[in-house]
Length: 178
Image 1 (tube, one colour):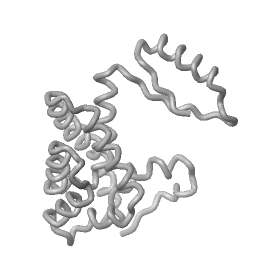
Image 2 (cartoon, rainbow, N blue to C red):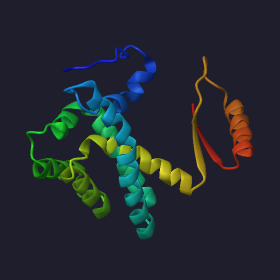
Image 3 (cartoon, rainbow, N blue to C red):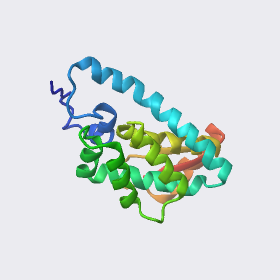
Image 4 (cartoon, rainbow, N blue to C red):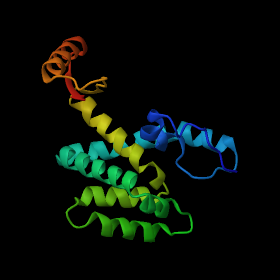
């Protein structure tokens, strides 16, 4: 059973497609619904656990940067993502491959965490875990991220005013991406 929502041509779908299809083929639509419902819950649990350890060790920034790098690597390298999602490849082989990809520059914490996620069979949710971790860091730092889309490039003065208005309204630090 292969299911497609038919949203591939929409601009928003390209950015959010990993939410809708962590696997290429589902035996029935109910499996997709189950994945969609539990993905956020699973990602939040893993991210919260990693957040607590990284905070205790004082490595929030480094962990966040490494998770973002890993998530962007998985988005960019479809072959790597397909290999990691392949049920015929053993978890130990997937973990060893990621260990080689990550290299020695990665912290022991992130390497151990990724190995845990892979061996637990949760590799399909690595990107969601990275997003949930980023949200936890932002919440801890009282930061709000906002994406500004305009028909024409927005002047820096307008973005500064908008940031100020949002910071006063929300009572937190605002980071704008234009």
